Image (cartoon, rainbow, N blue to C red; front, top):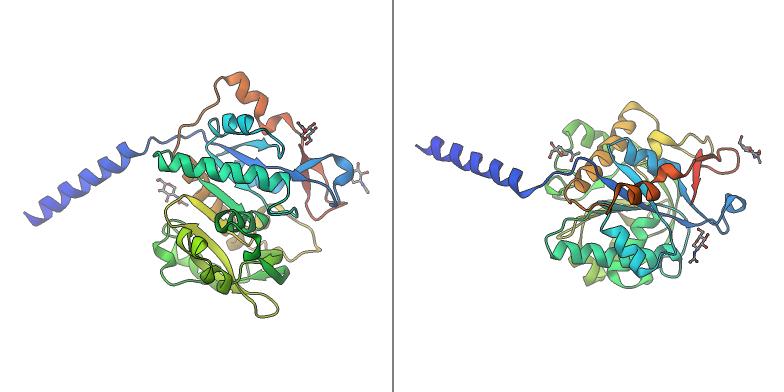
Length: 312
Ligand SMILES: *[C@@H]1O[C@H](CO)[C@@H](O)[C@H](O)[C@H]1NC(C)=O
Ligand SMILES: *[C@@H]1O[C@H](CO)[C@@H](O)[C@H](O)[C@H]1NC(C)=O
Ligand SMILES: *[C@@H]1O[C@H](CO)[C@@H](O)[C@H](O)[C@H]1NC(C)=O
């Protein structure tokens, strides 16, 4: 009797999960462009996206639309309703006073508003994207402090309860063990959110759950992975995309088979999340006009640390 009712409950809950989620197996992810000013690719054009982020999304069954950093509110809101998630890449622009930040703030507002209306729209921030999300949510860039973590590969120090998070709940114990013991995560940052600033900022603390932390070269303790408690927003201070796609010998980028599995786990996780909404372009013509396929990546391995770059 007991087992029969358990069976009934599990059948009901499986049915519920399936009917709740209208799975979209053709997700399109926006990646935000940023100014080339002051970078080694400045002479190539005004804004860029590192090709590694595009490959990262494509490797897990997503397609990419570049998001220009100077769209009007209307253009952005139109684009938001046409795509299924947004990735804020790493880089080196201001987290408040830049086209990237101003565009990003509108996207964050739209994603929150959508979620509040039952429309699941995931965001992911990597490195600068992490710092941008922390700034946007806390409302202040003073949440950031300097850090000595350029070219530093580290294992993650998991926070208590990380396994119950959305981000880590489907990770195998083998991969979790590797991630927490091998120096596999690529850190390339001169700023960070210390655990102390995080804990001292109520807005941030109420919004994000810390899933891992790390120490920089000066023993500064910083937040390295976090996810929204309520909202499907995810951020890593480290770079999950680099292990599979970047090859410069100037940086320590681990390419062990298990490091590649870490990259693949997180791209699978994020693209999975973007299958949860049904935003669509109004027509196939409009979709084609917006796709990354309109751009060609340029070989930049001889002038920068990134092997290919899209000039947007
Ligand atoms: C937006 O930036 C692009 C370069 O990325 C430039 O070509 C275009 O003129 C800019 N548009 C506006 C409205 O400023
Ligand atoms: C992606 O979603 C599928 C189906 O919901 C699930 O089985 C799988 O574990 C998810 N993968 C990750 C990495 O979250
Ligand atoms: C870098 O490589 C590209 C593509 O092969 C080439 O066009 C460019 O001149 C090279 N730049 C330098 C500085 O060597």
